[in-house]
Length: 236
Image 1: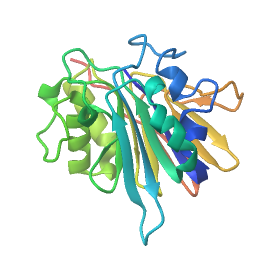
Image 2 (image 1 turned 90 degrees about the vertical axis):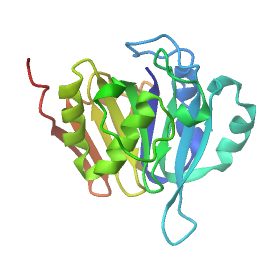
Image 3 (image 1 turned 180 degrees about the vertical axis):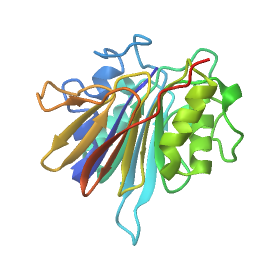
């Protein structure tokens, strides 16, 4: 129910991550290769990146409820947008959820950018201030922000125990850290010479892409990539 991508590394054009790869998010919006749930991601798109022109990185976003393939203005501007840290997504809306820009990832608390690929029962999510939409992903993001990203793994496990059918693949970044969870859907990592990509599926056929095992947390920093197993959901 969505495809997303995170980048941490050197300053690169946003277009090089989202639009240019032969199987990047642009292509995944209409023809994903590994998506298990849904056939297309035509219910919106969002690109968030960190602006490092000031004393501290500032998250900036461009979101739309329209399909990515029709966004001519973004296609024109994206090559001029550069960042060392990016979170981007194309959306396949959960049934019954609104299709609007505010329901489209990445979400933010002013410090982090966060995307959710999956589905979760809104009834199990703890109430948290600042949700940008009533959709499940926005409410999940607000709950994660309220608890803190240092607790991301524990939060995912607790929500999964409350909703065993939840799919909780999350990407989050704050300009110096990139976090990802694999929980119920695909997640891949590509270690490049100039940085690291986390993505729902490979954007090309490079043999260096690695699959992240399910029920794992991934942390990317300047020190490298670390994968940590998460506790499996509890039985009845």
